[in-house]
Image (cartoon, rainbow, N blue to C red; front, side):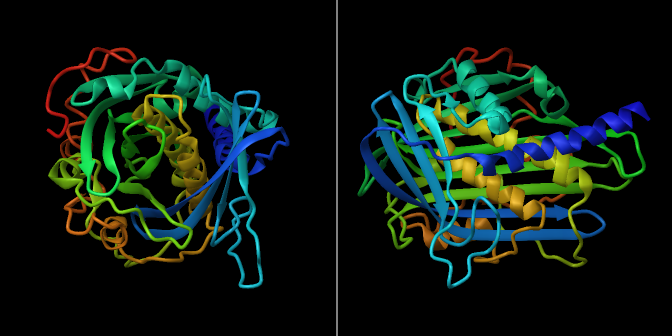
Length: 401
């Protein structure tokens, strides 16, 4: 009974990760410079078990950046389709959406000033930044290791999340040189409460790719796939989050990424985007483990993967904060499906200039076991022995193998 009560209490604690993001508040300081960027975000939450659950959202994000005299940068992110603070769909009469606002120190990369309600998110972000031992630009054409130790999240990550990273340089026709970075996690175990009491294991993994300019200053595209598989309730259950963002103009037209080529296609292919969207046969809500422990693990893993890919002190938070907030609203049923109804990979192919025709997705294997997950995810299981500590040595192995 004690363990059951303790895990029930943790479920509420996990949910605070999602809910606390809504409590970020803007700060009023002296502003030296201001800029505005736009991103299209596609998110898909899919679950299969005795029933199926599917929720997809497509929205245009506006990111406002203000550089301040104290060395910090304020970011404000808003959605064109729904309120990121409250989760309600925007009606035709609604003129503005709630903004997520936060500060990042341009020298340290730390997120700060959000108050006690955001202490957990700040701690995860700052622990990741603190653990970085590699700068991505020094590893172009190489494969290396990065790990993040978080003993305070041992129930979600086993205390440590380990990645194998690769970075390649690309040449586009209109935007010049770019750097693409991929992070594949080793499988990790999440502890969750069973329907009939007691606890069980959820096998999880995450893969992510970020496409930056040559100086790692601007994000042009990001793709993240989280998957969790379990049999804690007697039959196989599977939870997937697929998230993609790409840079656009104010009207939502993507940047021209023509020329990325086969190297980028191979790099993305091992992240594990599905070729087809889930077909719902018997619709049902997400089970409790998916909404609590599964959701919390996905959010933490997304922060870690984004920071690992960046390998520098730039704000990938402008992507993962609105993404994790949106996925939380989808999972808890407060955000109805809108936008596209196909697979995220299909939406990217049809929406991003220069990406159409690329084979970036893999066949759909919902409910995969740990061994299969390693093979489909690009060998995540195979590198477990060699991961070691954070930021281990790099190798010259081909990044796209």
